[in-house]
Image 1 (tube, helix red, strand yellow):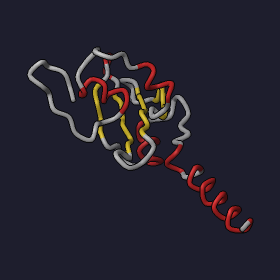
Image 2: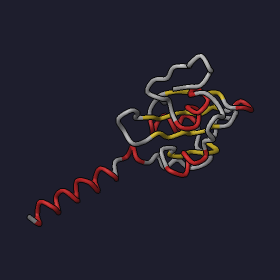
Image 3: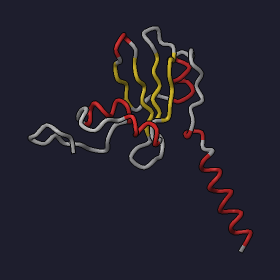
Length: 120
């Protein structure tokens, strides 16, 4: 029984080490370097000041959603995995509909606006 447990543990650890669980991008990397390393983003959103947010999401099945923020010159100022408890704690209930929160946590699977203007 022990060999099976060791193999199972090794498989789980290998899954955690999957390259999509981290982008490992240094601040100052160019937008072109990001795309060369991570591929085309799943979504691009404009940011204040002329920057962009490049979203890399494996949703709804994967357990990652990365946000990479190049500034107006195309240099990365921030890159982070947003499917973490700390990132979800930053979202304030009632601060906006799903399109607004998706800019910080990734695109939802599906959403609809109700008559009251809240997202479901």
